[in-house]
Amino acid sequence: MDLAQQDLLIEANEPVLVTGAAGFIGARVVANLVEKGFRHVRCLTRHSTDLSRLRAIQENVTDRTRIQVVTGNLLKTEDCVAAVKDVTVIYHLAAGTGIKSFSESYLNTVVTTRNLLEAAVNDCKLRRFVNLSSFAVYSSKRQPGGVLDEETPLEEHPESRAEAYCYAKVKQDELVMEYGKNRGLRYVLLRPGNVYGPGKRAIPGRVGIDSLGVFLHLGGSNKIPFTYVDNCAEAIVLAGLKHGIDGEVFNILDDNLPSSREFLRNYKREVRKFRSIYLPHALSYFFCFLWEKYSKWSEGQLPPLLTRAEWAAFWKPTRFSNQKLKTRLGWSPGISTEHGMQLFFEGCRSPARAPRPAG
Image 1: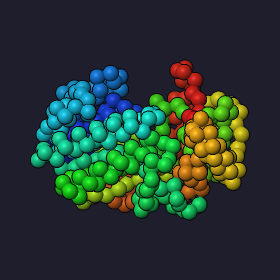
Image 2 (image 1 turned 180 degrees about the vertical axis):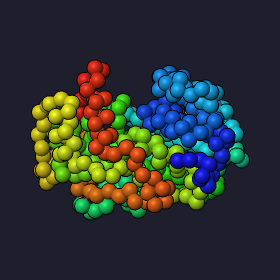
Image 3 (image 1 turned 180 degrees about the horizontal axis):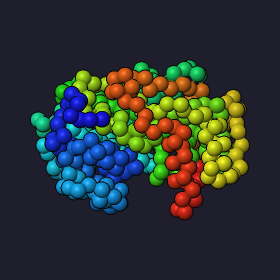
């Protein structure tokens, strides 16, 4: 995108903030902003964060002052105030991931966001707050085969799900919308599907799980809502720059999505072979039903990891749409799914620790 030919919300010399900037998606967002000519990109990271991705970006620019790396903790009010000072757009990507505890996930996703929002609404230069959400927030009570899009209702009782991340992300979205309604915050909510690319190695949970020692393939013919990390970063950046989209929600996913079966077959051929067992949808639903019942009967001795709600959220036959992302943001995937999968499989074949399915 040529900034000189676009009617954008901010100019290239105005400062922007990226939280979670050293992460898998965050580093790509920083790189995308730099490629578009932005000259003041502030990157908020934690003290213990690996900065190798950001350092690699800095090495490829002649003026390293364009990328300002600052450390801070979003649980500290003073760090939030310092991070948002004079910025015009905030890309909020930081969140608690991989956390099993509901309270800890809430703390590291919702409380941190509230602290950042409080600092942001008190800075008069802010023009947009871009919040990275997730497909996890959508209600599991969908008709089989229906379309999941931006009009799909949110999960009404996320506390009933066995996924702390779902609960925290629902509450985070509600918080951002509350600030928009009551505090005049100009925001955009983004909900990516399964973000993949070199640097990630696990098989998405929508394909199946390996918690029981053998990989259970549960996705079958379902399409997997993949988005290549660079395509996702492009959509995120555009959401902070386009006029006329305040208060909007956008799902981020690519074109020509593979089915779960296609992905798993290609993974086995391109990366490594392993044994898997396919459970048809009716059988996998019954399996989750039995797991849920036994978990209740055992009073939690068997964790409620597989429930009917989880089945509906991850493995119920569902169609997806990225039409709004294309029409309202003018976005298109720069990297095709075929090419993206090739790059992903190449990354999985690298000499690093052997990849294993996500469970």
